[in-house]
Length: 296
Ligand SMILES: O=C(O)/C=C(\CC(=O)C(=O)O)C(=O)O
Image (cartoon, rainbow, N blue to C red; front, top):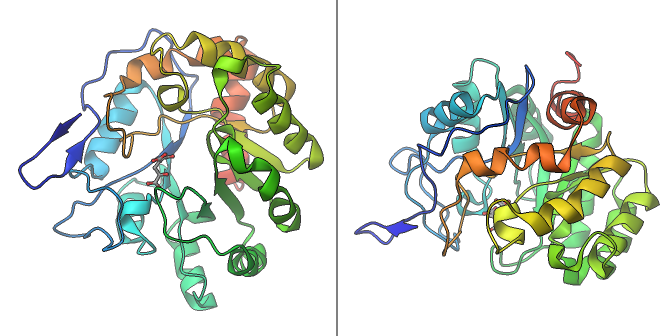
């Protein structure tokens, strides 16, 4: 990572290695973000990190370079509840991007309709204390009820140590749920370790809990080829092939120590989804069902 004169960090590259793995036609990068550009879309005063600009052109350039067709852009915490940067990127995508918003719980129905019009198909509830000041479960539940009429889902981000305390909240959500990065298990424990076992029990508790099998760069400090991540995550993809999504996480918000190589991240895909059928479900069929249901 590098830091510019304003203290804005950059933890991504525009020129990752070319992956060896070729994604199937129509593949969706279902977890990525945009930052700014700040001059047009300032960061939130509550942002916990201040990144350099990583706007739509850069994201779409990466998409093409890696062999993907579409993006799902997730509102990052540095933009707070102002979804303008995400909506701007979707609007510039030629229909090739949709998004997940972060909303103020007091948001009105008219604004939710406007977000839907702009390509938003879900809301994200972030429980990471290092990223957000508070995560009011009662208010989040009200939001979850209010987005039901739009056919949206809820994306939840939490770490493995609070999975147990999250269970009643997750059980009360009336829409499909997507868990970011599998709730951040310790992949060094292996596929039958306590974190993965607890996470599978959560998936077994409801048929409409999906997960993103993402972020080897955050979960496996050994780096490429991310052997612990592959060993722990492949059985999950094989067991829940219709409920898994994949994404780059570009521009890798808030990564302070490493600069992930997106080519190496793409090359993890055949390790966790070893057959063409699994790869098609993970990269095309599943994200299309959730984000472009009218085409799926
Ligand atoms: O991008 C991710 O999924 C992970 C993030 C950043 C994030 O979630 C955010 O800023 O909203 C993290 O762990 O710092």
